[in-house]
Image 1: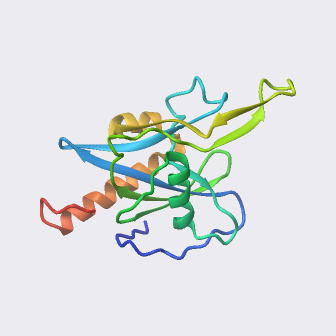
Image 2: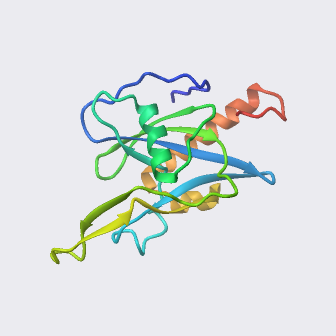
Length: 181
């Protein structure tokens, strides 16, 4: 698994096909490890919970720098600019064929956080001829690793495994008390 613990841009460009790039924020609070996931907005996900949550991500244009796209999508979906030491998590392929490239970073939402997601329009109800506006993301929350594994899209569980492996590897290389970010 490729790993990148520096804040340098990887320079990896998106190839052709359905490609997304995203960021997985994690925090350590009260000696507990938590992961930030987002719930897609719109009518198709309104009553879905387990397996419906995802990392903040978005589609990349052909040739676009993927880490930069991931940072832009995180800010657009959550309304805050991400920063930190980027941990490359590699890519996964979701059920619909989309490839998702991901990075993780340690961070937290500000106490004053209020979700400010982009919106999209679609015909709703179907065949009604009426356009309705929906938030791209309707919820954002930190979950314990155990709960996150139930909530996240099943194809993205491997990203949690890769993050855990990177953090465990990092813990072995640095003394206790050293922080990744």
